[in-house]
Image (cartoon, rainbow, N blue to C red):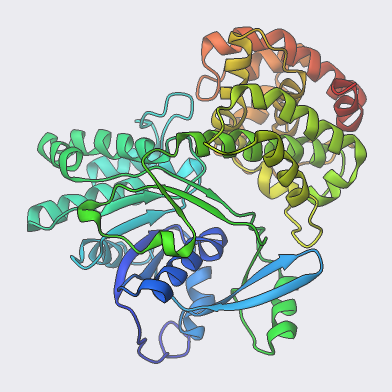
Length: 475
């Protein structure tokens, strides 16, 4: 027995070649599946050591199962389970950070991937630069044992350099535009403050390919766990539920060219994934966030419930009409067809993706999901009433109360600051003006241009409600 949990057999199978930071439901429903398929097709030692940066819950659920779990593909009329057995261990950084560093500096590890959400990059979303005031950054600059994902990357690379070991490839799987360049930038900024020579070595020898990831994966519920037990006849404390659709576009730029055969698993290996990133971030994530804020305020718990309302179907379609002119499509892709496919995915009743879950961390998500499109539309003289309503709905949401006056459990790094801003104002226009002054989210130039249209949308939203406002902006 260890920590009160049952002992497990020694794991056999492929040796570890990947360490993954931020082992949540998404990566287990997405990245682990691709790696399993790649090894099935082409072999290789690409077993994964997962790292939970904060909570031991995933580790504690998976350890008695010898790290094996069920991934369930949920279509409208079917649920197909599959056992995933690519995890070799799960570490908890808060309990044993040295074990995490030891795993990352193992020469057999060729890739460190991460899904730590936008806030895990300890950067300023408006600029993409490392946030020097972030408490985790301040800690990691003055301690050899890090607490942030960026700190773990930098310190592990520092140890590998000192040992004469080649760097690992850093493979970001988060919803950030140019995610590889963002993580490269913040790692180099942190490294340069520690040792300029280290930063130069990482810049020259390291690789940080950009990626686009896409698979809707709602948080696993107790009902899901019961459903999987009934479906498979086996208890599983940590299943993941996901939609049938999956897409992974990866820049084929790895240290020494060493990687799983991702192409054999169905991923696209490309020289540049920018077009894929912008299409997905703006058309999927942008409308997902807009529907999450307006749908939540209108009383809907999930995206499929929201999109089942004809008012919000029309709102989604109108959003895409505003977004598409600001998107350059990947070669061979019709953006109108892609929008239709997204609508069908949103409507899948088996994927109960919570509006509250999608609404989390909006201060980190807005710049890449909505504000980039708004900036380009404003520059080109295109009106964007639906996008402005989405920004206003975010402001209404983070104000801390819903349309019935009930408190909202807002999960956001700036939650206290944003709610304080809202409660200190007397009018809707004042709230909008104060929110637009938060420079971590809105740069001064964009804020000035958004003031009038977002205030107009906010007046409609606060006075008439989200459903009515969504109907009005599409009329």
